[in-house]
Image (cartoon, rainbow, N blue to C red; front, side, top):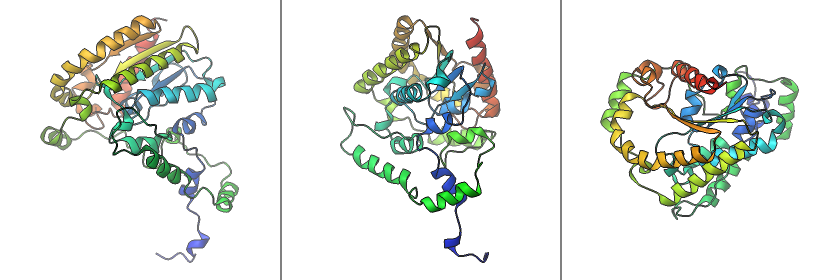
Length: 323
């Protein structure tokens, strides 16, 4: 199709809008939150899809990010506390999506999701003990910096964009937390074909079949630091750690492995509960009302919008039970 203009006369509005946003996901979310917050959700993609902050008591932000491990949850928390003191000074609740019983065995920088997580979160990688020599973090960081800065130097086009669209906003504020390819249709429903494909092709991941002692130690320390930092916000803050369920077929197939990993997970969590009286853990994997019906699932492990509604309303009752 020809429209009568040369390429040099056109501006890619979508591209320049995104290039004006911070590379840091937490800043993209927080910069569009003017309220004094009552609560923050931290975690991985399960909490991102499965906890709807609009249904929690008060004013909340969801800072969950796909593949985000404990250490980067801690980094996200510290950055928000340092940069948005006015907005978080009265926070009463922190909800932490604790992923699964393999929670402490997972380090995103050693996983296949490393590059995609760093790209979407905005953080750079760090060298870890036990990291494979095949993983060159310095090279990954160089590529990320190039990716984030690509096209940002064209100030003439940026100035034109700002002049033409001085009040540019996206109507759905949830989009502000996304990064280009991070948008999903959360209203969709898990199909029967996807369930059958899972039964036929699924293999267990390395974090389920291998024990990484150095990672468990590292992430346990990071979790403890995170709880300590949270309690410094105010002495009466409520910290709720939750395990969200997966679809029933997944839970059934992972049951034997989960028995093993519970022996690692539960003692660490119980020790944290004993040390930090503000912290309470709830295992919601047995929540049959959502677990049993595919109508509540986006895919095999992530709730859809209706599933998130039910899950969040239940979490809300836990938060307010003691009030």
